[in-house]
Each structure stands twice: as C-alpha cells, then as structure tokens.
Image 1 (cartoon, rainbow, N blue to C red):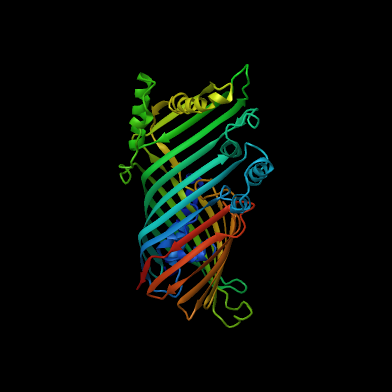
Image 2: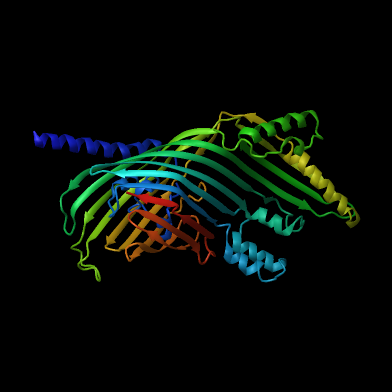
Length: 507
C-alpha cells in the first residue's frame, strides 16, 4: 500500500510538471527579466537563486528554495528602473557633442555613420522600464510554497531611423535630400499593474549521480491578473525629397507619408472629436480639441491574464574539490523558466487614427521670401499632413507581454554565491530583446549580513554592462540596493539600471 501511495504521489507531481511546461506550447506570445536589488547587483539574472515573492516573476519554482532563511517573507515598496538601447550611444555622443566641434561637413557625416551605420534605413532604439512592487508575501512549507505579489510596470519604447536623424541635423537641405530619403519613427507607451499568485512544490527526489546527492526537483507556476492603465502606439513611415529653387522654379518639398496612431480613453475621444471638426472645417485648430491631461490614468483601461512558470534542480555537491572551499557545504541549482506569457487588450474607447498620402509644397524662389516660406510650411504640415487623418473605432489595442526563456545555474558555497544566466526574448518590446543575453554574477556575505555583489551582462538590448550592489541582509530584515551601467556603448548602445529592495521582513 505504501508503494502504491508513493507511485500515485509521483504521478500527480509529474502531471503537475508536464502541465506547467505544456501550457507554454500553446500560450507563448513572445518579460524582460524581473530584477531585484540582489539580481541586478549580480548582473541581472536570478533564474537559479531569486527566492521569496520575487520568484513569482522570474522562476516560481524558487519559492521552494531554503537559502538559510525563515519560511515567510513580506516585502514593501520594491523599486527598479532600467533604460537603454542602441540609440543611447554615449560613446558617439561624447566624441562629437561634448568637444565643441561644429556639427557640419565630414564631422556630421561621420557622427551619423558611427551612430546609425551607412544606410538611411537603419533604425536605432531607446527604451525605459520602471517597475514597482508595492507588496509581496511568500510562505514555504516542507513540500509546497505559496506567494502573492503585486507589480506595476511602465515602459516607453522609441525608435528612429537614420533618415530622421539626418533631417534633424541637416534641416531642409535640398542637396542632402535630392533623392527620396526614408524618414521613419515609432513610439510605444504601455502601463499596467499585475497581481500574481504563485504556487510551487517539491516534485520528487532523484537518485544520486556521481558527485551529486540529495537531488530535489521543484516546479512552480504563477498565474497573474493584468490591469491595464494606459497605452499609445505610433508608427510613422515616410519618404522625403527636396528640389532646390532658382529664378525659374520654386524650392519644392515632396513628402509621401503613412502613419497610424492607436490610442484609448480620453486621448482617443479627443482625436476623434478633432477629426469630425476638421472634416466640417479645415481651419479647425488641433489644440482646441486635443489637450490630453491624463485624467483617465489609473482607471481600468484593459484586462488580461498572464503566467510565469519554471523548474529547479537542487543538489548537494559538497564533494566537489573547489579550491579555497574544499570543506565547505556546496549547493548547486540548475533552473529554467518561461516568463511573461500573456497579453493585454486595451478596449476602453480604443481607436486607430491613420493617414496615407502625399504632400507637395512649393515655396520660395529667392532668399527674400524664405521667412514666409517656412511660416507657411509649418501651417501646411499641421493642416495637410498631420491634421488630416481618419479615425476608426477598434475592438482593442493589444499588447503582448515581453516574454523570455530563462536558463540559470548557481553554486552556493557558505558565504559565496556565484551564478550564470542565459535568456532570450520572444520579441523586442521595451527592454526585451530577441538578441540573447548572458549574465554572470557573484555575491559574498561579509560577516554573514553585508552582501557585496558584482556582475556583468553581455548581449540583450545594449552593450556589455557591469553591476554592483550592497546593503544589509539579515535573516529577519533586508535593505539592499543594486546598480548597473555600460562602460563602452560604441557597439550596441548604453544601458543603466537601479533597484532598491524596499523593506523586506522575514519570520
């Protein structure tokens, strides 16, 4: 009877594990990694060591980890922020824009080539994410663990191409834009809150293997309810061509353009009201109808669901002959997770404003009339291009969460923790990237309660970054900080991040 009971127990646990990873085959839509003060200080990983309620967002299986801490953790006001991307090229900025050079001629050409490359079609991105976890709690038992965590995220993602940068630096230069040149940019803003409920359990013990003994398999899942606060998505594509004027022909601008703007709530209603007014009176002033003040921010603009899931193998490898730690207890953890599967549908007064056309403007024939030319050009752009659009109501503005595959390993040896993580994003939303990322980190606990953390990140949405962190981390209380920055942004742009643990209590 005992063997039968054990077999039934194992079958239930295996079924639970298969269910967790089976869901990913049907729900993956394509998080940038969640980071605590600890994980950011160690490079930004955490798949194989981030425990407590933070595990909900990186690997729920880690709710089962017993890292010499009490069973219950409560946290308040965790804050983290990250920004960066290929557009944030500090190396180019410092080389050309802080040395007093005149940005003209070869200097201007070399600067744009260093920043964007040779082609006017090349794009560069800048993104920023702010994450706040107001409250979280986790409780671990011998065979299972539970957690509840909240989080608010705001992400801004902005992209421009080299042609747009050329327009900003050359101005209306007919020689530069004598051939059609792409002028493109896009912008996406999204803000949402989430409530995550985590569950993990000890699935089984595995047989000893070579140097490894006491091998345990943990699995966890954290479904979450998503509450949309705000979103707006802009995509602008165009070509620009100019013809220099002379005594017999005017200076001419030809601008073929196509753009879409998806919005919700108050801003969407204002844009639709302006469209109606413009169709009745082409002299209608945009500012009289569109004056968005964000009064609807905080209201429920969208709902959705997501899930984070993962598994961790934990084993005793004390027999490994590691120099300086020959007689130390050693714990190895191998983990994998899939994070931020899900999407949001912003369906409150959602609309799509769009335009597709060609704008031709003929102006000055001589220098004396250039002042009037530019005054009239500004009015024509507002009325004939950007102000002349159509709007349609749509069911919703959909946002796919920035999902990731995460793989990690950590080795704990008394006061020293070393970790390696590998991740790859399903999409390029926010600071997420399809470009794979590798992080390396270490933590040493001086006197047992002062963690000194260092790490590095290679790949992802920016150049190689370096991290550090410090603070106080007792068994019953944590108060720590972490920071990350890029030393050389020449190849893939800069990035920076900061995180504060808030107040963490354990008992």
